[in-house]
Image (tube, rainbow, N blue to C red):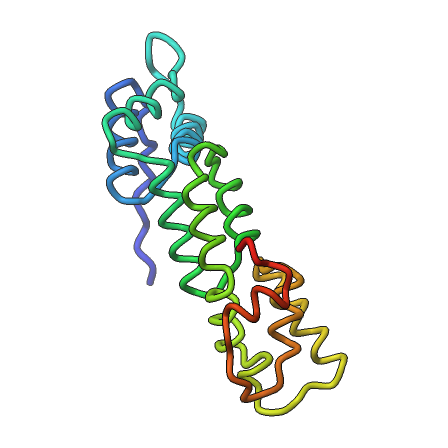
Length: 188
């Protein structure tokens, strides 16, 4: 037999102190950006309501947390760049992720430079993981090669680099400089 459940207690509406406490807990728990913090706090205000004297200034609260060093968009962007390139994803994937996180261009400059520096190595990591090009067991037919190229492009890699890697025969010795030249990505 089922026991009757207690009625759900509705959470109290937020005020300035409760909003600051929510923001502090969120920033302490998650690597975040100013935009993501503002979005989280706006959602909480919508869900629970507001009981303050004036409307909440979410922008000021996020800016204050950035001043105090609780959140740092540039560090967040660089950590995302390192994480994505370490897993074999390219610069376009990084740009997309940073745009969704609300990181501004000025804060993403170092992350973009890191992605450029790691472009060939990240593409090779992706190819190794997916057994593409020199890491494949057999030479692909043209349709399979096009699928490999599409997968690399979806992973955020430059199409020239994807074509250069997928064009390598299985077991080929890999030279990163040659790949940069063949892909037309000498600036990567």
